[in-house]
Image (cartoon, rainbow, N blue to C red):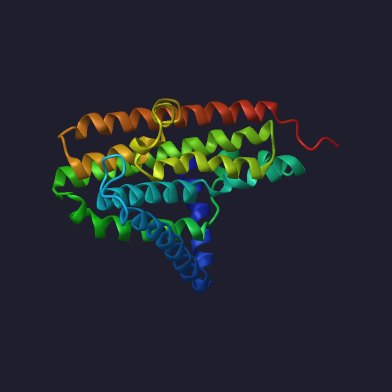
Length: 260
């Protein structure tokens, strides 16, 4: 609880600072709108040539895209500081974090990511706009399931980012980590469009499909498997968060500091 309070205190202070630079926030929102608008334009251009992709029509596929963008935006917002870890390790500046009387993970995480905030805001609008045409019937049960799926998906992707950037303790090259983030981006589209081996990899090895494909499929196509799908997402999130904690602790033991 203390670490959680410290995390949100740091984030609150950064949000207070942001209130003095409101233009930056709206620029971030506009940039996210342009980025997602371009991506969705390409997606719908493809659907202008075909009726479905892997059994997914345009509206369910857009719902899936919005679901991933929302969970990814939340995960990158909560864990933005992880992207600074490679530079801190290479320059030996992580020492200044380690000497503080608090968890270095909690101290590192909070960084005000305007791009991620924009992703979250735009994704929510897209999700609500396409939910009806995609076949989602909002009830208390479906709304609760959607909330649980977002929480689990966010935790899953935060765990993925932690594992990925914890590799900085062994290979501190930021470009490599940012490039590897593209693996999670595969979950932006229906898993059924990928070859079987790749679909299995992003479902059972790196289960990012639980952050988008399965929640969107359950909401759009139904089947009454809310409990099973929610449990699957919770297990996947727990596994990735556990792997992230293990990788972080192993990396800290490996870190030798700035030397002299």
